[in-house]
Length: 157
Ligand SMILES: CC(C)(COP(=O)(O)OP(=O)(O)OC[C@H]1O[C@@H](n2cnc3c(N)ncnc32)[C@H](O)[C@@H]1OP(=O)(O)O)[C@@H](O)C(=O)NCCC(=O)NCCS
Image (cartoon, rainbow, N blue to C red; front, side, top):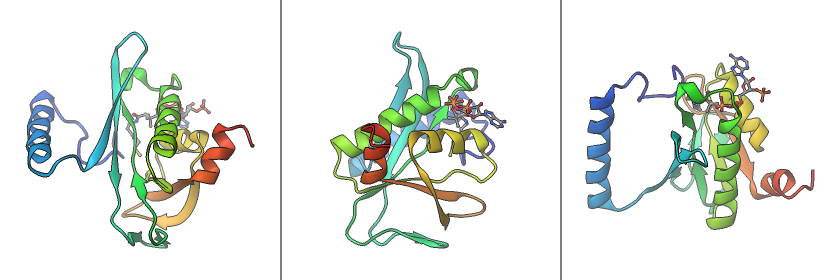
C-alpha cells in the first residue's frame, strides 16, 4: 500500500469519512467514475477498483492521450490477506473486459509506481503495455487499447 496513494494506512473512521464525502459528491454531481467492488464467488469482499475518465487532451511527462478518444484510468487494491493468489490479475482482466465491451473507451491506463512489482506484474498479465509516460514522482503510465485487449482476450496472441 506504500505506493497506492492517499488511502494508505487508513483506519475505519477515515474510510467511513471518505465514504460519506463520496456519497455527498455523488448526490451533488452524479457519478463521475465507475466503482468496482471485488469479491470472491462466495461473496467475501476483497478489494476495489475505481475507474475515472480523463479530461480531453490529458497529458503528463512524455505521454499525451490521443485527441477525441475516451480514455479511462484505474488501479486495483486488495486487502493484504488476499495478495499473491492471482485475484488481482483475475480482477484486472474482468475490469478490462468490462471497459472494452460495456463502455465506449478507446484507451485504458494504469499508473503503477516503478517499484510496485506486484502491481506491474498484474497489469502486464492483464494486457497493459509500458509507455514512456511518467504521471508524477515515479508513477509510470501503462496503457491498453482495444487492439491490445483483443489480442489478449480473444486469443489472437
Ligand atoms: C497490486 C495487487 C492488487 C496485486 O494483487 P495480487 O492478487 O497479489 O496479484 P497476483 O497474485 O495476480 O500477481 C502478483 C504477482 O507479483 C508477484 N509478487 C508479489 N510480491 C512480489 C515481490 N515483492 N517482488 C516480486 N514479485 C512479487 C507474485 O509472485 C505474482 O507474480 P506471478 O503471477 O508471476 O507469480 C496487490 O498487491 C495490492 O492490493 N497491493 C496494494 C495496492 C496497490 O499497490 N495497488 C496497485 C496500485 S497501482
